[in-house]
Image (cartoon, rainbow, N blue to C red; front, side, top):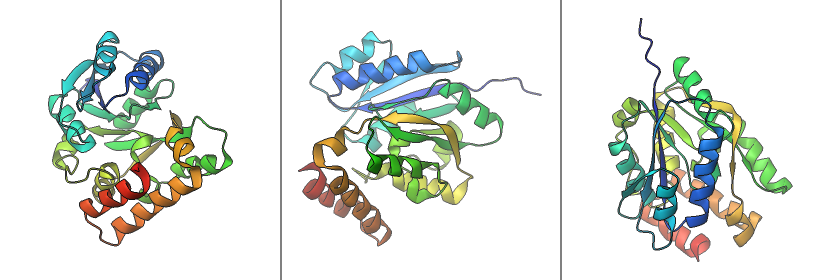
Length: 234
């Protein structure tokens, strides 16, 4: 009987996030409950601020990449040496003992899953959408909830589809749901509400909903990105 305890590689894609990279790396070091985090890989898409320096200051391994979150996460996965990959966005903070929670699910036989999510906001509107993350349906998934997956399963799924400049997390998770049971851990990551505060909560959620709908109606990656540029990034 094997007594091998799986190791975790944390992968964080970044681009010009000098403030948030310090916050997430501090949260990782503060909230880790085991010594099974093998490495923290910060995959930089060409930052021209202090992101890289700040990541190195906190002891992360920085990997230089072409810009694009799917591309950056895939590159991080190829460099990772842990048994489990944990993808987390730079403005999402993991909960206390997040690593123990992941390892417990791996030992229980789950190969992939995420945490519930809450926003750093008291907005009832955002609280409702955060509450929905406890529902185990792919429509309620998103990259802000972070994602753990065994390296073996990630390779089997051939990683993120790099044609998707946006929506890469959702497209990947859709493939996961077709193949494996998906686990939602009851503790919650805390994600920044900054985009909602900048662009308007209802307006931004409406456009995210439209992207979901367009995807399910067959829109290709370019069409989704063009919609994003017109209504969200502008």
